[in-house]
Image 1 (cartoon, rainbow, N blue to C red):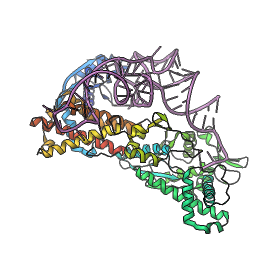
Image 2 (cartoon, rainbow, N blue to C red):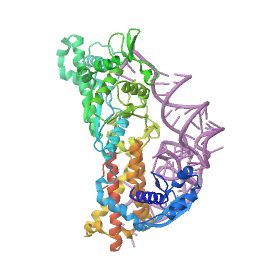
Image 3 (cartoon, rainbow, N blue to C red):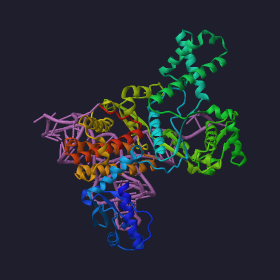
Length: 548
RNA sequence: GCGCCCAUAGCUCAGGUGGAUAGAGCAACAGACUUCUAAUCUGUGGGUCGCGGGUUCGAGUCCUGCUGGGCGCGCCA
């Protein structure tokens, strides 16, 4: 960032000097040392406008470049690109920047404290969280961290769908299992929940309610069981998420919407605007007027409201709570709801661009090289809890984040468990631990740590050191990219390349065994590496053990 | 049938808003510890970026038509 910006500013200065209008200049890392350390393709973009050859423009720019900090060793024009070869001492600036900013290195205050809400997981309270929820959870939490990193005030929210037929079915399932456990005749509901956990809840309910519950009329009994089952499951979910490193600011219940009369209110707004109509005894929302493919029912012919109307009310409430941006993270099976959700927000009078829907694709678990079978119907879902118990929080979070949300994710349990270099989590953490170890050794050798922060960084000139510094320089740009593209997986790729570069450096150059000026400079580089790995892993929510 | 996502090395995947010679990891093979953590490093081989058109100085990236896979298309949530 800091060096790319320096070079971009030099180009901008030159463009001003030669009277060329241009507001944005991009400077990039190169893919090969032949092309220098940094490169720019401005000349191509300008050539279209100016109707001159890229070479001519590049030449003009290069001839007018200034270099107040004397960082530039050589500038080459090659195939129209402007390639910068920097002096080694330029890179010391990156280390200085990191030593100064520390835990803030890479932060931007773009959000300026604006309120953003990210709603994710939002699993029904009808069973334990499964691995799919794990992906949504990790994605949402890391995106939230990234938004905070960019200066936003983020609220993490979990929407609890505590009403409707699913909850009734849950109560019926629990009741049936209780009867079964008590040796009473029972009939299992047709679409009931078959998971083993229903028996656990049934057992708990037997202990909690005793035999009195059978004296209640069935309706009352089911009401009690519904509350009990729901609360039990919510508590499981809350604990699973906490152990997964996620804490929600708000658990928002659908029943709250009903209590506040928000469904009615949202409905009235749509009606007053003339966006509703009656057909076949139901009331419809003319969502096609706002780009949806078909109109949707809001009130069913039996007078009850649809889940969609509750969702509209929910989003009305979100906007009223004053968020400048609302982000919903949904599994791929809900992607079809995007147009209607956007339509409803528009109909309510809000800017649909402030509502962002992020979709993530399915997770497939692999063990021993083959897919783990999962059947929702038979209740054979692998739970998030089981996964956490097996691979741990760090690996779970890292692996869930590792892929583009738009791509399906193959989660290799064996790899996540492996304590070897094959496991990217360990690979990155190990680099961090090595940095820590060096500082422990330094203290033992009575190195004056303070001098690390005031040393002459121009001693860092080995290509391995320069390579490492170029990667460190790139951290803020990588984050910006992850932020704008809602792509947390960029962090994992970045950290792996940083760790790789550090391990190379560590293996072929001596650090503490080196003569004084060089030793201090290298320790400064170690410090910077340690700091950036820490910043990155903190955002992902993966721990940074100092010893491994 | 319609909509969304995906297709890049043997496998799993990266490839910012179009830039140069398409990159990692794993697997395979060959090497490196009397040394600050070998949970590491170095090197080698491996590609028609699913297929066909188009846009332009330039396409893995954008547009379009196919093919294959996943997910949706309810007065369920």
